[in-house]
Image 1 (cartoon, rainbow, N blue to C red):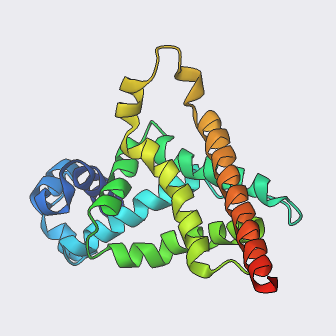
Image 2 (cartoon, helix red, strand yellow):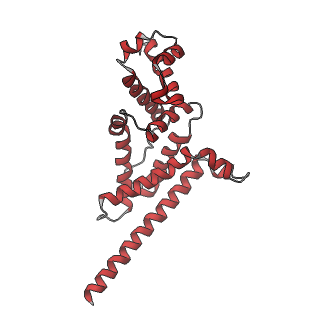
Length: 218
């Protein structure tokens, strides 16, 4: 990749992460990259396209650093869920050497721009579909699609909480809690919590079905 383009893209990611899309300016980005302002138009066209490319690069770097976990075809869904959650947590709160990439992705999640739809279709939806497949293995085959999505979003939400409220969690935790809030520990906790909830939901559905059958027979 052209060195000037790469420097602009890297500087843009950092400035957008710090200031947000609206507050960041092309001049600030080019000063950070030691590049001419006209170079943005040459390589990216406009600020909006530069922002989109910066967000995509941030995602690519996180995905490269924390790739999707491989698992054999016959792996149990509980194991796949744990590996998926571990990967999500790593992308959200791992990689301390490049926190701006996580911050930029978080900004886009909390304050979506016009880039969000393209980002969803290219990157977020494939991850959701993967999680839906895992959840589908854990729930009855006749579970409604909207219920599968609710469960999947709840799992993602648990991971996202530690990214959004990490500093609050740290302040509210006991002094000896450090070893209980690592990525590995959180992945185990969220997996157990989610599996218990899924199991409870399945048991509740079974009880409701039995109740309906008993009422019909009566």
